[in-house]
Image 1 (cartoon, helix red, strand yellow):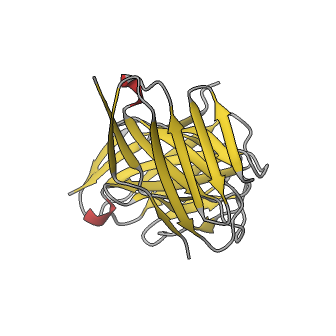
Image 2 (tube, each protein chain N blue to C red):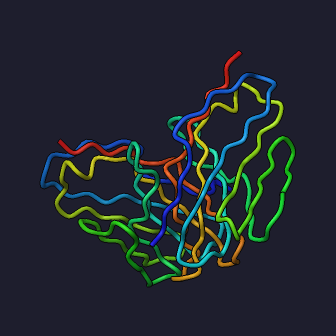
Length: 112
Length: 113
């Protein structure tokens, strides 16, 4: 089976750095994705990790440790527009179709 | 390119009524998916398709049927709607490469009374 855990809510200050953690237990592993979802909108892709280490993309970075079943999304220089839900999703090895199993998401609130 | 589009955006049904949600993508993607999103539950896969004429069950398929007669379209049907099917439904598509992300449509907000 699949189990993905993320904190439900986080609050951070504009201009600061925040780290959103994700732990997973899945039947096989074939990559981890992070998505951003603003209220009332569709999820949009942020990052993909399949090997251990850090992937950096502008203000956003994502880290993966496969041996620990752990990932985090790091957001730097926070802006008010970063207030959104951040979804961690794992692609298991079993089954076809590039299916994803999603966590319940972390609601991030950025304050002044 | 419009990406992934969904029709309708909102719908209210009475218990027992039927309806079809339409998803269309113009990116020539092989794979398409239907999810539902409920508070505290995250996105859950209902059905998916790996190509024209093929469909498969996801995590929560009961009460839904799907069809993919054309590569660009993926239809989700509710034969007899129930209040438990009140949710936001998202369609997504992706190409077949391993690391290719899923692109999501804007969602359909469905209420069943």
